[in-house]
Length: 399
Ligand code: FES
Ligand SMILES: [Fe+2]
Image (tube, helix red, strand yellow):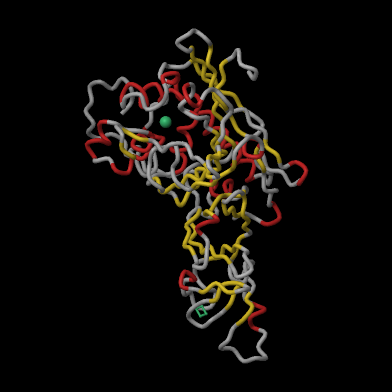
C-alpha cells in the first residue's frame, strides 16, 4: 500500500514475491557469483576430524573431510560413480573412500582407486569428483567456490594479525544473540551492520539496555564508501561531555567488522577485535563465522560473554521472553525468510542500507563485465587488509 493511501485497508495490497539479484546465492545467480569470488568460511578446523562433515554453502551440498595426512578437502556430497553420499565415506591417508564401491578421491577430487574395476583399467584417470580449494586459517576452514583462474590471495586483516592475546574461530552468531544458524536470507543480516539507528531503539528502549550506557543515545550518523566496502561513523557524547565516535565497517561482499557494543566500562574504547562473515548457507539460512582476538587467562583464551537477555542465554528464552526482549535475531529473522524489498518504505535512517545495496549491485555488475570485485588481490605481497572500525573517545591517542 502506498504511503498516503489512508482510505484503504490491507485488502488487495501487493504481494510481490521475494528473490532478486542481491539475495539469491546459488551457482550462476548474480550475488552467488559475487560471493564466489572470495574465500569463504565453510567450517571450523576443530570440527573436521576423523569423520566427514556435511556442509551446505551458497546452496551447494558438500562434504568436508580431513585425510590421513592432515589435509582438508571439500568435495561434492554425491560420489561421481553413482551418487552415494560421501557423508558415509571413510577418510584415509590419501583422501576419502566412498562406502558403496570404494572409489577413493583426494582433496582435489582426483580418483585414485576403483577397487571393483580390472587392475589394468585407466577409467579412474577420467573421473574427477567436483571439488573446491580449501585451507585452514586461524582455526577456520575457508574455501574458494569460484572460477580457479580468478582465485584471489587469501587475505589477512590488520585487526586479526596485530595485537595482544590470541585469535580464536567461532561459528555461532556471536553478537547477534541467536543460535548457530539464522533462518533467513544473508542480506538482511548483513544490512543490519550498516543500520546503526536500531541500536538506540531495539537494544536500548525496547529491550532494556542490552549494550553499554555509552551506546544508548541516538547517534549522529554518516556513511562513507571505502576502498573495500563502506563504513558508518556514529557520533555520540559520553555523560561527561567527551565526544565518542564509533566506526562500523563492512568489506564486500559479506564481511562485518563490528566493534564491541559494550563500549566504555570494562571494555574501554578501542579498535574492533573481531571480524565476521555472514555466510549464506542457502537463500533462507545464514551462519556467522568469526575470528576474534581475545585475551589469555591461565593459558586459556577468554571469549567475550555471550549475549544474555534478562540473565538467560538467547537460546533458553521462552517465546514470551523473546517478545519482551527481542534482539537482532528476532528483528532480522522476522523480516521473513527473504525480506521483500518491494514492500519496504525506506527512510532517511536507511541511507546506509541503500548505499550497501547499491554497492553490492555495482560489484555484481563488475563481475558480469569480467572485472575483479572490490578487495580482490592476486598479489601475495598485497594480502593485508587495513581496517578502521573501533570505539574511540576523541581526545584519545587514536582518532
Ligand atoms: S557410488 Fe561411490 S563408489 Fe559407487
Ligand atoms: Fe543489533
